[in-house]
Image 1 (cartoon, rainbow, N blue to C red):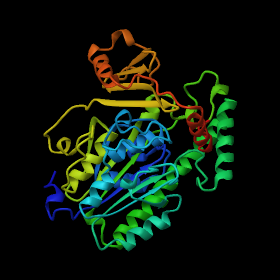
Image 2: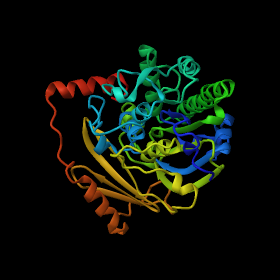
Image 3: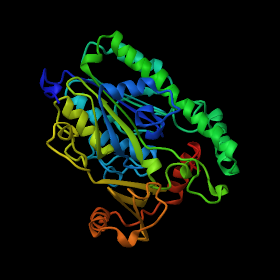
Image 4: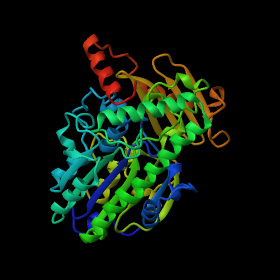
Length: 409
């Protein structure tokens, strides 16, 4: 690795963080997918660092994307459902760049949901069209900037923007019905729609972003980070597919690797291209992009800069946590320490564990064999968060309405 580019003209590096909703790593060519036409993303990976094993903090948008922005796990940043506000001590990478004098903007799938009541995220509009995003880039090309995009172009139902609410809900209903039908042809129809959405994200949205940076002569002074909030599934974990109810059962209800293994590509001036095979975490993204720009990470971050992995100062896997929630309560927490993964249900303390090197599809529960150190990690992390949070009837109704609005129920 060359000298940290943030030190060559402090704060002069531009930053783009693109978070693709529900994008599985194994559906990109650079991660081994054979049928996918994702040449633009593959080229971005070839020009930068591809992290082979990045583990999302959660399988749900609200929890996972807040973890990317803050570098904190959900049980620390507090956004365990769409109605919860971020813990006040949780700083965002957007806020850190703004305080350092950068122009900052976040574009999200719907400003009424993601980063609601969080001025520190600097939400400027929606991401269902690339045009406002590129327009903002063009308008702010003369100063150092940080652009954060959360795109639902790869999120179920893979075809409709969230603002087209009736069409979006109907598309979601049809896709869930195809999963429930347990028909091979119906399932392949859903997966093909997903493949087309992934290709569109790569060859339209990401291609337009990179082309605009080139046209503005900014590509050589801009760090581009591509990742996903979480992955996706199509009911594989349900023996009875009729039990699948809404988006929550396709991603959100479990902590399987298909919904936790996400792509992470970092392309930045001064970074030699390469591949990092060891495990990293989505909570490492905020500290990394700030370190690239020569800025300090949020003091409350659980993650740490990935730069030491690039120059040999650090080796091996980083221990990853992942968790999910149900109506504002933490419902499961997992610790992933290759080759082991231990999942604990909260508050029942039921567990399941997998030996990932011999059982990558997580089919055989080997909880009796899991090293005790993994249980100690979960014991420590769950101190103080095991209690169920009681909701009033009105609060539970509000959360339910939002989940229904998003198609999770």
